[in-house]
Image (cartoon, rainbow, N blue to C red; front, side, top):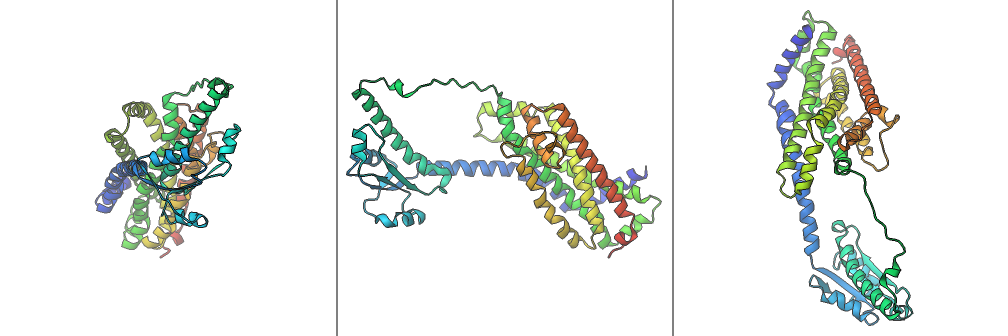
Length: 396
């Protein structure tokens, strides 16, 4: 009962603060949709710009391969630069004076005449917009290659199918949910892990170090509530803020996906199926223990700190630390197993990916929940023990 009274008191104090409302509601609700919208639009604009851009190319050895040279000249989106010093072409490309250089060997015609491979060297800058320059140049070369092969087969009275020894019929047994789920599931943990941590950070710092600075911590310590009651009341407020922030962030992301006009209808349908109520509740079930883990740690450090500023400097590095396991969870080959299910944050990332894909193993899921609740309980125990030390509370 005393815990509930402390909880209501601290919650009212937190909700009166406009900065808390901004961090818990406005910021995640706007940032998540803004991220997916801005990133998608910028990526599409850059791809369109790179595709429509007129490439500036230089061709070395056009006298040896006049047909290939003419293929490039005939393209409407290519400008041929006639005269360049060969020993400076890499500098020209690096400085973006030209986009690429095609160099043909002097033995080009001889090799083709003997039904061999002709040597072609392409200089380009791989760090340009998603490798579009390389793709566009190689597309023209491939078209000329197909023409030469067809001509060669006709001259030798051979069927073009002789070039293929196998006819591979690829059957992908993965469902649409698994395909998109594996990709979307790698992104979703970022949302509720990062925003859950952010949602817990400000209330956690304010209810510990903030009260020390304001001198209000002594008042609540003089109440009939025990130290355990006070810690649990504050902890539940921080936990509620973390969970609410994660819910709001994912809700904002879901709304943004539905409103984004450039996403194909079939993908939208799969996303809606993936984020069904059952899967959504299971994913959010992961948020509770990991948010409890974050909340207890942040509250412990906040109680230890002398001031709000010191608490910020102590907690700030955790923003970077929690990112690494989440990133590792998106790497190819990293799967949820009996070992990774015990690693905090990483297990959440991998479990969320399998949940969205619809291939979660119930035993591994139980192991993930067990490890998270154990760490959350351990963190709460540590927080209470820390709060019972007078030298910690009155450290300032």
